[in-house]
Amino acid sequence: MRGRLLRPGDQGYEPARELWNGMIDKHPALVARCRGEEDVAAAVDFARDLGLPLAVRGGGHGVAGQALCDGGLVIDLSEMTEVAVDPDARTARAGGGCTLADVDRATQRHGLATPLGVVSATGIAGLTLSGGMGWLRRSHGLSCDNLLSARVVTADGRVLTAREEENADLFWAIRGGGGNFGVVASFEYRLHPVGPEVYFCNVYFPADRAREVLRDCERCLAETPVPAGPIGVLGRIPEAPEFPPGSYGQPFVALLALHPGDPAVGERALLPFRDIAEPIADLSGVLPYTGAQSVLDEDYPDGRRYYWKSVYADGLGDELIDRLTVHAAAAPSADSTIDIWYQGGAMARVGEQETAFANRSAPYLFGVEGNWTAADDSAANVAWVRDTVADLRSYSGGGTYLNFPGFLEEGEQLMREGYGRNYERLAQIKAAYDPGNLFRLNANIRPRG
Image 1 (cartoon, rainbow, N blue to C red):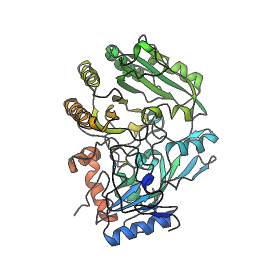
Image 2: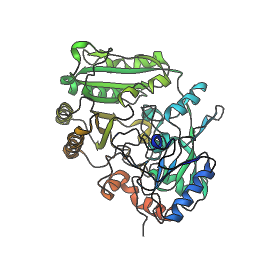
Image 3: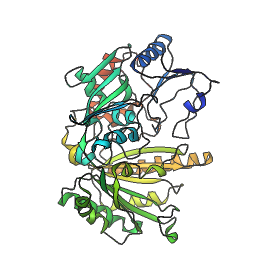
């Protein structure tokens, strides 16, 4: 290997086994800090031939903690962060260890962006392979919808190019099917004109106005084709200088949205979201695109404990909004939230079976985020998330977003919900590229047969 091989006791081993989610505490036997495709292939061959558990770490942000394993080998891509931008072709190729910040920093030099997530420290690999929902989802689609090609190291150690014209079945599968089919060493994305400045809506209302706020947002999107992907948030006001001191701890409902066009146009387009009711605080304004991409970073620090699950819904009636409000108020941690992702737009114009990503037609996704600090509070916070999701399922036609999967404890049942009608085809492709299920530390699809 050109990169470093870390063993327990080596300098750098302890930081290499630390993930963003403080709930994860695993001790791999080896960490392979890869520097290129050849290193990745050598590590895959080594794990396969010795029968070692194999985990793959990209940006290290996966909430389920599958980027590490006990007693096995971790393929660590964190040093593979090169980004090459072709502004004329409007494409970018990014290493598998890149975070959103790495890609945005490079593409924004040219006033371009590809749809990624909403927290800049998120790794592009796990995000893209399981779909990738962010601020640009309604205007330009999901991360996986903007993937043009990928370099994939498969279970037999081959390095393949996956694109529409080459290994098309593999290319279809990695656009939503997770890390089941190999290690993606690099991603090539389509870019769009966005930035360098955008208008960002960030407004907080009292939670007792939740019906009005969430339903009016729905109405605004239906009546005016606003190229923004709002997120409604139910939580409690943090003790921070940007909020009035008397509001600390108060339940809120917030609307956050990024307008990808001219900031002046964006301000006018997003004004109806801000004028729905008298706000607790309106933090909206013009930001650099990279600044808007990192607005939420402080809410998700390294080392905090996280447990997230999700459920889709076909509507947003008053009864459901009331249930959301009640559950948000009952969260054991003041840092926990329930997020309402307004879907549709560009992401819904891609057919359910054009890529492996499923559940595109559902108009809403609810992300139930347990976020807390003390280890002794883990049981109560995990129980709150599970109980909330169980209640919300009565309003759902099924489905889940596999970037918010809890700890994947439901096994194949959860996979079938996440992949929907695409599950059987994915299982067949899995059998073709990874018949021994070497890549099983993920939202795992068992090889068919």
